[in-house]
Length: 624
Image (cartoon, rainbow, N blue to C red; front, side, top):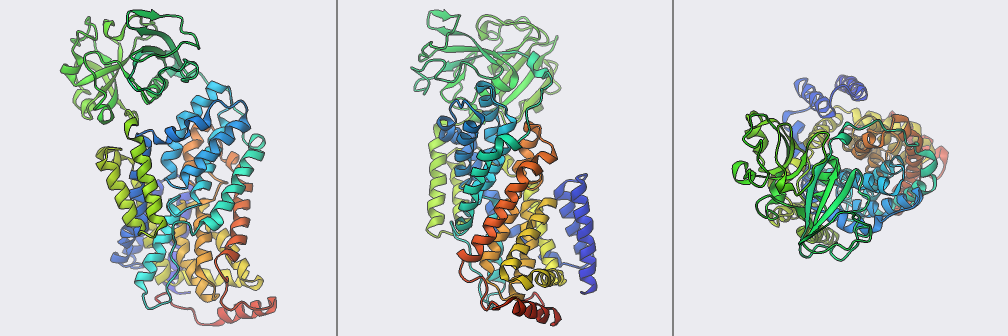
């Protein structure tokens, strides 16, 4: 082991310790490590940043944009709303949840799918009287399991596929590694997903934590009044209040319906919704925001229709100041649209129930207005004398329901293109471009949805992985794997690669774990004379299917807060699933992708002899 390899090993140990401590952001730790390696000369400057141009990394960024189109058009809810329905038991709710989520995650990025389902789960749990803690973790696990079934299902598989492409182009004279097609990983991923879904349904009620008593939410005292008009062609026209799902919205109360020359005060569950009805709700902020995203109803603007430009607007809270010219005027007469370029969506008056129509409310100092306004409204009026406080509510833009099927068509087109062999980067680039050009999401939304920290982590991991190759550390670790597992045969070596990848994933992100394991796995395959494709599949699955910690996959962290989970909750429920996924993956990968070894020894003694021979040979160089 060279001096450079020892230095790199020490730096990596410090890096892992920093990641485990969670005191510094993952992207900063990875970029800082890469910088140190460049300064010490352990990796060349050009090689250190080459990962940021890797095809797999670019594909991940582009697919974030396509997934934004699915989210901003409400396509995900359109596909799953009827499937979720009104479950009566926890098991039924889990069944209705995990199946559509797993299917969608096979073809779209997991993160936006999980974030889109968070309010759906909250609403379903409250409406049906079910514990939400039994649903949030199954949501994350189902998204991970579904992502194992296709090339584009998870960013990890895309990264591994990109690494293979890069290796083949960098070493054109070497035997070329088998690249990943759209469904290469499905041979292993689909069985793992099926077993995972069955595990969730069979033991989810027992191993998931029981709900805790939630403290009083201060938002509960902020009751907004909002009015929504039923637009022509709305899918809820002709339905009862109950069938339309408006009867028991969490934290929201349908106070009345304004209909032509009459008003329905006591709104019963069997009341039929008619076109142009104005539905007046009173409720907390989060529920009012969810209401804005229901297809076929739009806020009643005080002075004009504004449905065409709603998706490009931002939602802002503004508190009327005592010196504001709005004080004493009704919303209709205040000309808020022409004065501020904004439209009043809802009004809150602390401790008072507002009556009458929204446009007739006479504003007082201290009233909180929920506005739909231009993107620069908050910046322009943050220090205005007209308002005490102006704050933008992130992620609250109106959905582009009319473009939902366009977004779905783009997704289907991408799946078909990749199935017939179109290069992934070409397909992802076309899908992202069409998503913006066909107005499934805006340019700013496309930029905002990309998780740049994830891309920075992946790019830095490529540089660190290259240092592991050039210093020979990857060969050292590979020989160690063979020395320990090689005496038990190729399947044991495959299992050792899987376990080591899982351990890496427990400390760092899934994508970084895959990148760092790639050179080790390749060196292992070369030294043990094994086929690389089953090893590559095991890396892709192991780096994604780590369920025992909240940091193993990004979606696990996303649901940790809403579900009120602790670290041990993941270990108790996800630990067995991690083991099950590993056993299935190693077993199938060893037989599904051709012979595991080109010249496997016939006996255990032969394996032990071969391992000793390889360890006694001079260390191989990784440069071809």
